[in-house]
Amino acid sequence: MDKFIDALCLQCGMCCNGVLFADVRPEPGDPSPLFQGHRSRVAQPCPAFNAATCACTIYAERPVRCQKFECRQLLGVRAGTTTPEKALRQIRAARGLAAEVEKLLAELGFNNPRLPFTRRFQRCQRVAEAGQLPETQLERLADLQLAVHRLTGLLAKEFYA
Ligand code: SF4
Ligand code: SF4
Image 1 (cartoon, rainbow, N blue to C red):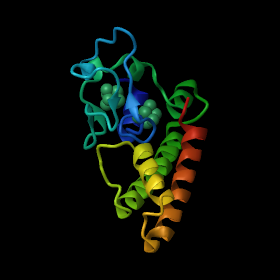
Image 2 (image 1 turned 180 degrees about the horizontal axis):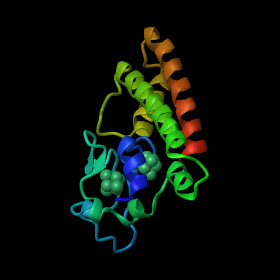
Image 3 (image 1 turned 120 degrees about the horizontal axis):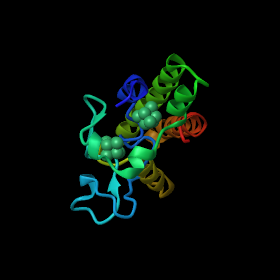
């Protein structure tokens, strides 16, 4: 790892834990062991991600797409257009919103930690649209929709490269 990845990614993990992406896809001939036993994509949160250390457990053999991806914050720090301190503030803000979304999803009963955020939110929306959410939960649903809106806006502006 390089010093920028040490400084940012080990405090973040959002491109591995299901916040930024729903899955990891192989490129043709990708030799990464992540795809052994899988026919195509591997759902996020990625099974190779260690949430306790915020690190990839197969870093040297991670998929080609993982090697290629650098978010806007990491690119900005590398290019000198932002500082590590500013980038960390964006990471903390996004992680804070992601934690809020996760908490609200759990309170609404969509707390499967093996599913990425987008799938859990889509399931919740489908149940709500089918009128199957108790009336007592509608305020919480509105809070969730607002938190997801804020999170996706921040990710679009500051993270997707
Ligand atoms: S989203 Fe950016 S800062 Fe976070 S782990 Fe991925 S590349 Fe690193
Ligand atoms: S293989 Fe490693 S770098 Fe790629 S998504 Fe999984 S944990 Fe992240």
